[in-house]
Amino acid sequence: MHKARPASQLRFVKVVTGAGSATILGCAGPRLTLDEARFFADIQPVGFILFARNIEAPDQVRALCADLRKAVGRNAPIFVDQEGGRVQRLRAPHWREWMPPLDQISATGDRAARAMYLRSYLIGREHSALGIDGNCAPCADIARDITHPFLRNRCYGQTLEDVVKNTRAVANGLMDAGVHPVLKHIPGHGLGTADSHLDLPRVMAAAENLHSTDFAAFASLKDIPWGMSAHVVYEAFDADLPATLSFKMMRIIRQDIGFDGLLMTDDLSMNALPGAIHSRASAAKAAGCDVILHCNGDLTEMKAVAKSAGVLTPTSQKRLARALQTQRKPIDLDIATAEAELDALLAGTGDV
Image 1 (tube, one colour):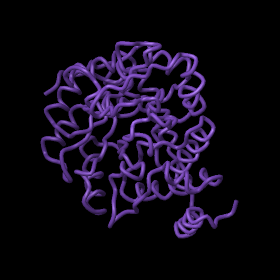
Image 2: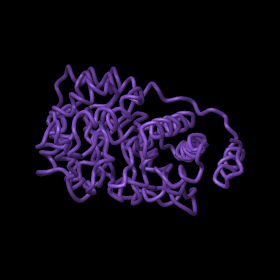
Image 3: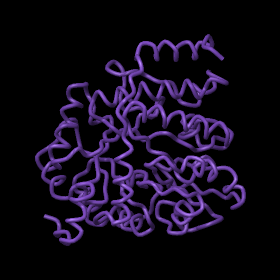
């Protein structure tokens, strides 16, 4: 068992959100094990994240979501990565297949924002039907010719204006479907030339350039209540540590960019981060991340991460409470009509 939390922190946790551990965690398979359920009940993570290994069919996903919430005794948020294209956990034959975001934006031209709104609304309605209420999207990273292929076609444009417009449309579509959007990868991954799943990207751009482009995109979207950090080194500000682990970069995110939402790390298991998994968790928490995201479902790792992450701070509790309160009841947009409009836009026959 984990060391008991201080009584004062425990009371604050129960009153505000029900969450205790400063974590969002995965599970190993399509069904919750007894050991996982006991662990989650003990530490009370903020919420959960699902991956392809957790997803077989609609009834199975609904049952898993119900069991995860039953384990913690509350309506904890459950997230999934469903950007469309390569990053898509819900797939045919049970769910729609989506082209990569940048490809759809190119195909729909001046109507890209409307098309991205409809796409995101439809994705969100699929989530809501399963009991999933958070999507790790939109990406507000600005694509360049040098952007690593792992990210480039996941972006929403190649200019600041296009990225902000299309990102806002995606966030609105998800929220109108009753789903929490997660803004990523703060403060901007578009100048990264390495895949952060495998290596640590280093951005050499000058501070002025970053403030006027990549950082500006997130500043324009700072009101989105959930965010995710970038495992990227920004040489102009901190040549030693990626943003996720950097107090200097957290200060830029909070003060210069002005993001005051609930900030989770990108997946702690990614090879961009140095050190053992438990030291990554403690470093990210010390730097200023509110919540540690651990995705691979390894129970031994999750125990180490939870121990190092500790409990939510009072400030993080307030951010979490605000973020949870932004969830909307889905608007009643006819699904068949939305699909038909999106198909028309993709075919170039929609209204301009």
